[in-house]
Image (tube, rainbow, N blue to C red; front, side, top):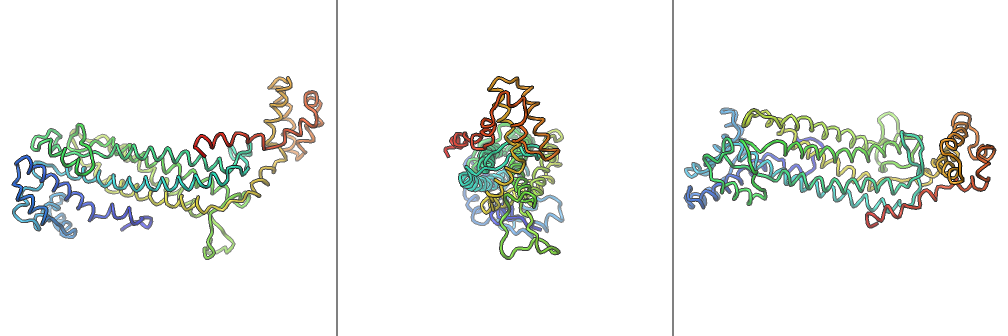
Length: 430
């Protein structure tokens, strides 16, 4: 059953028909190479290319009888080709065709994911510039810290997405290898030229040394890269979930006119897309462990990795493709409320300006640790007793020895705390 989150372009890549067709492409390319080496009559290759085909159900039927999918595939193709089928798979082992074809599919999937990331980056860049100067409160440990801008929040995601694009490209390159070196990787029954020819035709490079399989450290690096990317998406979605909470509501997911938030509560506007992204990111990241465990195989090969990968690789790429699209849509249509951001920034009665008061005291000659205690005791009166922070500072005899009332007042302004926003954006050419 195809998962509900499968998008059409990715579905085509992992469709069973495409999987077998890619393996057939590898087999035909190997026949062409063997023909150039004089091991196969060139006329036979032309027949193979003209007649080679398969029926997926027939492959399954044969497989149920012999319990070997690659042999079932070759038998099904042979029924179309006829006598010349004897030249197909010459000198190869099953994994020669399976691993090489799999990496072609991964290459195709990676192209989709890179395009997804580039779309997300464009949306993030646009919205970062849109809210470049929109003040909002920064939070550390979930508690108000110092002012920032909403544009800087998004710029952070943009920066991480740019790194993810480069990570994805490196991971795709890491997986772009093929292997046609025989049963234990020694080319005992196949010429290395066949591997070179097939890999070049399929857009891969030959694995520099192999056993019966392409080594699974490649796959582990690839899957963990998908997990890192999923982590970025979860970070974006989690921030939206926080900002959409009723007590905050500084931003929220787009809620269409006909959308319903709850079967029982008509008033609900839930961050369902963000929650879905966070949840499915865990799914993608969860595949990292089996990918690591696939690296150690018995001697020159066992089959323990294969069953895992038949689920892991299609599902991880498919799930990431889906949540990349979901995140792009989330950011693109995100509803932002600058007035509420400013209101929340002022919620604590100026406590967020305590760093400026501290620095002002130090600049006038106060010992830092002592000045810290002076500012802190007045801040705590605001937290615990609701007293006015600014007024208490103005009445504090220790503070007033160094700062006038006007100098204290000057500290209560977020604008000087954001003077370097342009410089940060300039690092991205924005």
